[in-house]
Image (tube, rainbow, N blue to C red; front, side, top):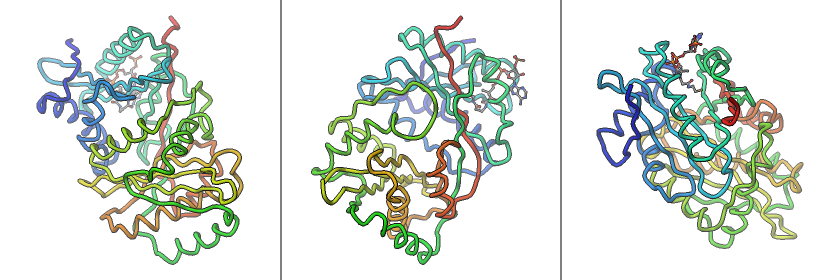
Length: 338
Ligand SMILES: CC(C)(COP(=O)(O)OP(=O)(O)OC[C@H]1O[C@@H](n2cnc3c(N)ncnc32)[C@H](O)[C@@H]1OP(=O)(O)O)[C@@H](O)C(=O)NCCC(=O)NCCS
């Protein structure tokens, strides 16, 4: 069965690849849209020199693409590791296509000298803990290293409730000043934000896997902002600085597709360890939601993922009104094991 690397510059090859991913997502979410948009994948597959580039692969059977995969390849850090995605055409599961393509991408990862492959697999609300990945991944040598809960916040929210939370959380956070922007980080905060982003992987409360600091520079931050924009997304950020020292204490990111704003996503939220305990996480998120409301996107839900071990962030999301809507399983395989 031929497996090919997909040239994301070709409309036809890319859309054939994306179609399988999209139909798999639609099936998972009971036919409701709001998943990945084509440009979001494409933008990240086009720039070979980016700090993270996606290589896309298709498996064909009798000329038709039946399974697709993506590998995210880091350039500067976490060089032991790779992030993968794998989707089989929903009507064609159980025929070995998933296994064949998985074996191929594992070998591809080994050929790049990587020793670990990670998959983050999203599950719909009706299949938490019982989606195909739960059977498939362990039989292919993967171990479950963490589980994230997905919560959805119905949108819009009554502004009075949001205002009350901001007021409540502002008091313990009185020694911090908040900054907010869309798309482009103000220059005076850029270096400190890049530094904090470097620590996101190691300081966030999540999985028990080896994560090295990512190497974020102002240049990489600007590339990230541009990539998100090229993905067709707006990025709303709120950050907090400590009034006495001027230190950047934390940030939170919310993103929404300009083409299909129906579902917005909460991305990273981090409060540096030395600044925890002042309700900053909740406050920054609530203020970002106020900004989001003001911007007036045609959104009906905001989705967020938290490690099931990250109780402080779960408490914040529930206080904001988000409820359980699915999960994400994080699988890991040691590529050096026989
Ligand atoms: C998981 C997925 C990739 C499997 O693809 P597939 O082509 O059906 O996989 P294969 O036919 O190669 O292998 C299926 C294996 O998983 C098992 N399996 C898959 N779905 C199962 C289910 N619902 N119940 C029980 N076993 C299941 C099969 O028994 C088989 O194991 P075996 O060969 O040892 O008997 C596919 O269902 C999919 O695209 N799911 C959505 C995205 C996803 O979960 N990606 C997984 C990333 S790890």
